[in-house]
Image 1 (cartoon, rainbow, N blue to C red):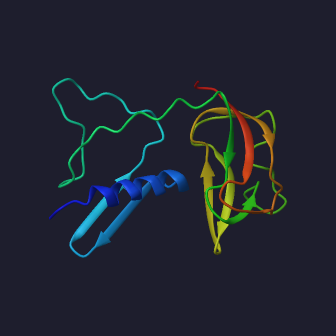
Image 2: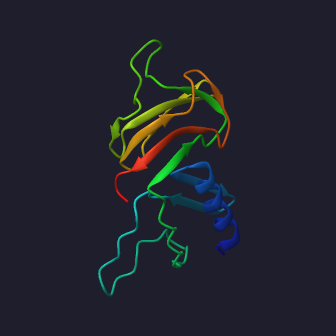
Image 3: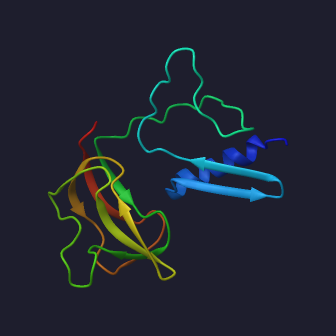
Length: 150
C-alpha cells in the first residue's frame, strides 16, 4: 500500500482549519486515522521514535508559532451558538471568568446535533462577542480571551 502524503497533508490542514481533533478516512484499501493534540508536543525519550500510524512514515512537522497572550476564539463551522446548557439556564462562561483547559465554553448546534465546545487552553474570558441563539459561520468571533499558559 502506498501512502499519499499530499492527501494526508491536505487532510491535516483541513482538520486544523476546522478545529477537528480526530479524523478517520477510508478509501478502498487505504485507511488513515489522524489525531490532533492541542497541547504542545513533548519530546520522546532519546533513541526512540514517536508513535506513528502503521504504514505512514513519521516526518517531523514544524512547530506551530506560539499564540499571542490575547486572542479571539472563533466558530469553526456553520451553526447556532448557545451560551448555556439549557434554555434560560446559566451561561457556561461569563466575562471575567477564569476557564480551565477542557472546560465547556458553549454549545454549537449543527444540523440538530449539539456539540459542547471546550477550551483548548486555560484562559480568562475578557469579552463575549456572540449572542445566545445567534447563527454563526466559520470565523465568527465568539470570545476574546487572555491566555493563562503563555
